[in-house]
Amino acid sequence: MFNINNPKTIDLLLSRRSEKSRRMEGPGPSADELKSILKCGMRVSDHGKIAPWRFEVFEGSAQQNLANVMAAGMLDAGEEENSPKHKAMQEFAMQAPVVIAVLSKPDTEHKVPLWEQELSVGAACQNILVATHALGFVGQWLTGDGAYNQSVRNYFKLSEADKIAGFLFIGSSTGELKERPRPNFDDVVTYWPK
Ligand SMILES: Cc1cc2nc3c(=O)[nH]c(=O)nc-3n(C[C@H](O)[C@H](O)[C@H](O)COP(=O)(O)O)c2cc1C
Image (cartoon, rainbow, N blue to C red):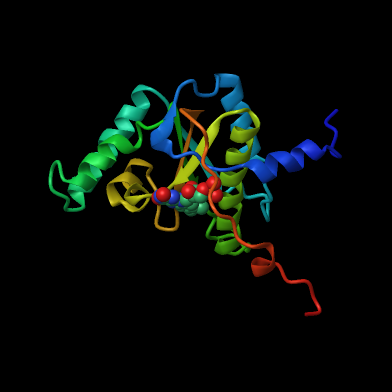
């Protein structure tokens, strides 16, 4: 039985940070570890039990296909062949052992507002990053041009209300993780009455 009153969980949450995807290398999570990570992505608050998220997992040759689609998408969007943006997009999906495209697929007929459904997708992404950290891997959440590219949207057969919440990269770190400045507690927290 999981001990809910476990201070290590707080340490885990307080130590999560991103690694740059371009610095990631193998090994990535095993199939079982990845399944656990994805299950954590599903265990989020979800008003109306809609499950407005989908997790599209890319490894190996599937990653290469995604990379090709993303690079072609840049050309479709008017980029020159071999321009820096085109080249970057050819490499984007290849940066880590695993890439998960997280899709926001809201139920637009549902009485739960679209915004709340999209918030649940953000929570799913964050849970995936925390689970990744818990298993000793590193992660990063990127959108970049690819998340907004029409050809990439077509590849995922997205309808108008659907969105790509991001590409979650998972792998092992090639070195020391750098910390970044964090907001000051008092700048973002207000205890009422003021
Ligand atoms: C929705 C979303 C999209 C993001 N897209 C990018 C991106 O395209 N490029 C980038 O450098 N960082 C992006 N980030 C920020 C990184 O994922 C990461 O949060 C940031 O580098 C800070 O690191 P931290 O996770 O340790 O706080 C994005 C974050 C979010 C929440």
